[in-house]
Length: 266
Ligand SMILES: NC(=O)C1=CN([C@@H]2O[C@H](COP(=O)(O)OP(=O)(O)OC[C@H]3O[C@@H](n4cnc5c(N)ncnc54)[C@H](OP(=O)(O)O)[C@@H]3O)[C@@H](O)[C@H]2O)C=CC1
Ligand SMILES: O=C(O)[C@@H]1CCC=N1
Image 1 (cartoon, protein in one colour):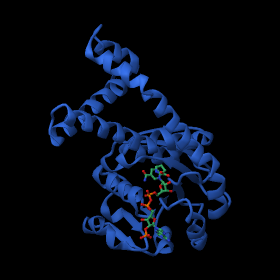
Image 2 (image 1 turned 45 degrees about the vertical axis):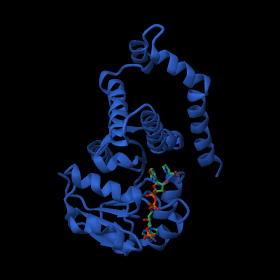
Image 3 (image 1 turned 60 degrees about the vertical axis):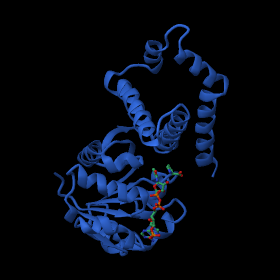
Image 4 (image 1 turned 90 degrees about the vertical axis):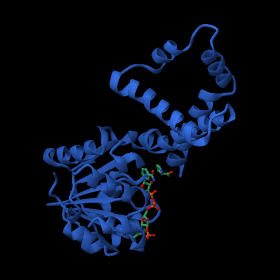
């Protein structure tokens, strides 16, 4: 159980998901969490659990030892500059989950020597199933151990070089949307071949979960597992080959590189 005060600045989709994950995992008590946004009405669920919700970023940051910034990339500089005097490099760590904002930029805002972490989770953090990539600067071993432990409670985390953060954003954070679209297409196909939507949804989602677990738990390669399914002259290889003729793998790879270019070139 953590006893550090954590302020989440920007309680939107991701900020709220992080708060939910921290509570569900037991890493934080509601009284250890403060979450901010301008319109706090949408934070009613967290408030009901005992989390402190406020529009006062300055007060939230001053009370906290860990500050998680989950603002949109376009207003982070403006919002954090307004509260820059609240940062204290001697006792706080600033964690940003914002796409495309470097640790250098964060240090420029929060002050020289500020311990800064970039973390790239995904929305499954709400149910402790995130994949989170992390890099850090000016952070002590004790601080990074604490932060890695925090993200490990919320799924799986890995420490990477900052130069890979944009790639991590695409593969891990955008990736959950790609996976969901894959599942949705399976549901649509499942309905066409006879299932009702509820059953198709369950079959498609559990099947993807099982495939992922074979890779994560058993450390297998996808093609090794595919070979076990493709009976010679069978229906799996016929369907897979048709998907490839239609550009299945190619469309995914192209989509990933377009997402990446969008971050890098913007
Ligand atoms: N969504 C995702 O899957 C992922 C998102 N990210 C990154 O996380 C960040 C947030 O994304 P997401 O949660 O989707 O975006 P949202 O728009 O859902 O959340 C941003 C929140 O910031 C709040 N906000 C705006 N201005 C202020 C302010 N002055 N003070 C306090 N809060 C403010 C907004 O609420 P209000 O208007 O009420 O103030 C809003 O709820 C982005 O930078 C994104 O790149 C990273 C990984 C995954
Ligand atoms: O689409 C976006 O820009 C954000 C970053 C990663 C997930 N959502």
